[in-house]
Picture 1 (tube, one colour):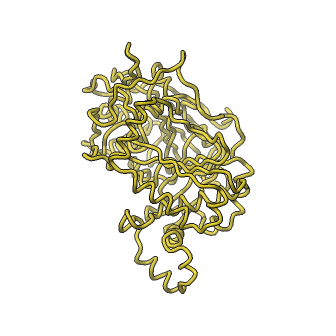
Picture 2 (spheres, helix red, strand yellow):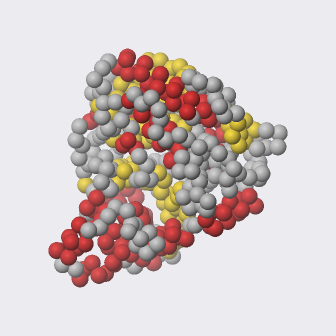
Picture 3 (cartoon, rainbow, N blue to C red):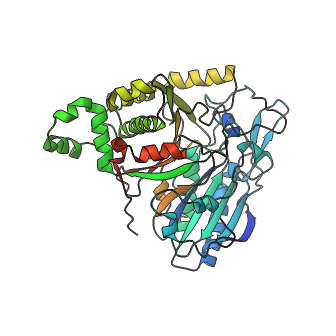
Length: 459
């Protein structure tokens, strides 16, 4: 963002208001691969508070300090022991807190239709910062930006310390305390006695790892909004395939009215999100104009907390995710109907059970490696985040967010992030990052664009 649009007012370190009750936490086999990933950058757009911005800054600093006392790993630093194991040293070193003013930037500028404007990227700090640098940089930072008619609170967190579940747990707690809660509703679990705990060591080159994708390629980024009704129509196509054409409009409407956002039976019914992912896979593949024999990949990150036996605490703090790659020749994916690709995604998600998670851990231990973000073959899609994350639960005391946005971290051709729609009824926003020519093709793809609508804001 040009200096004429944004001014750094202040930068300081916020420390926990209580000494850490945790000493060190060893990174797990789910944490370590993220050391080559950039910091997670997510934030919320809010209306202006009913008090002055100066007071807001004071409230946020105080509540952030209290929040850090509940999440002491975020106020620490990474350290590597003599055996090569990487730990979080919960040493209360604190996190960065930045205050920025953008006197020419409005809410409408951020929510403008079309491509996400570049100014959104400037609402976050720690750009292009690899998680490995947490050895000497803060593991988190909060940037508060005053707009003409609103406020943006952006949070950057080391990806080797948190996954999306833990990130939003921290963010929700920050909002909860700012709003006035005297006791947090969901305490994090720092237990490390899990299947992800390992003695395996990943050796790094001098200076640490490097990013695994090109950071200078031209990209376009759009938010595609899918209403609940649109998603249920996609889900109906995915589950019933060609039978849809044989149904009357009244029969389809009746079926949709009785349907739910969550699958009735997750083992037999293709879910709403799997259906949406399959539609995106098809449409992006078509827009890329690939050779029919070219193998395409749709990669999904899954939360393993509830897949293990015994289950992990749902508020386990750290990374507890694995990646599910799905493969299909471009020609076969497009020659079949939506249900073919959706069924492939569904089967692989259902099959990712306790035994599969444990096999994945054993496989990594036999060959420790970093997580390879990127699209090296030009035919891959990586789905991140989740419409189940409670992003709109971040009410800091004067209303729910107007929107959720992310920074420039970990973005490449084919990186998709799923957010819940603001309506909270099962609608979904897909943050789509593609090469310019692919985005143009997607915008002309009638099969998916018939379901895209404008997001309606109710302040």
